Image (cartoon, rainbow, N blue to C red; front, side):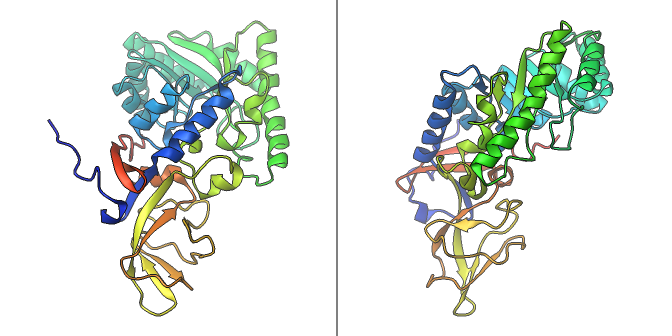
Length: 364
């Protein structure tokens, strides 16, 4: 039996760096805020596991009122089911015989739903489900403007539904629609108007499909930055918000009512010249797809260069000393969590828990 992690009870200043951290109080307030928004609404929260990939945090989201979990990958869903989750949506296409077999096997252990956008997807999943004597729920993904996966709204989606309902061992469960091309629009009013107009295409598609007799049990989609816009539309049933639990620098610009709970604890490892500092983290420790990270408590410090694997160089830095601790705030929490294998939870600068990130690196 494993003993108590020796880092529990340590001060943050005693930790090795870089280390992924989570502010317990901030995270809990984020969970409560999002859960409270959906408490008395017809739409329900189905958080996106890809944000943190941590089973302990996912369980806290369910305990706060979420109806199930969303995943980006089949391997993430397998991790969740292995840990007792019984309702999981894979908001992505699952392609290839080995994967459809895994999917069909998983559907014998839990309610599994998956996105499709063509008959090839549906036929392959149906065949594997027949072989495993399981049933897989299918959500037809509708492209409402992102230009990634998805069948076109309207007649094209209806035609796909007409064909998949004939297949054995699958169940047509509804539609998936993601306004991902709009979630980073900074102006909140503009984001709301454009996101609602995009999601309306999915709602109209639902109405069309139901007008000819097919039941559309749900529309699932949306994000943390559109939880209160598309998430409040009549006809939208599930909200796949993810980043709200941890937050990051980019989402803080979009939904400032949520708190940044995630950071990477780092140290100054060099002061080669008076104006310059080198930090012990690079792209292997903090996601930066949405721009350069920030530094907590030093909002005016700009990071001009963040492309090295293990280093970050800061020019015009304050009078930091070698060994000084800093909290890096990533611009993208999802890819940051995927780079780490555990997250240290702290309160009042003391480590109180250590949570494994069971699905980090799960890409299949």
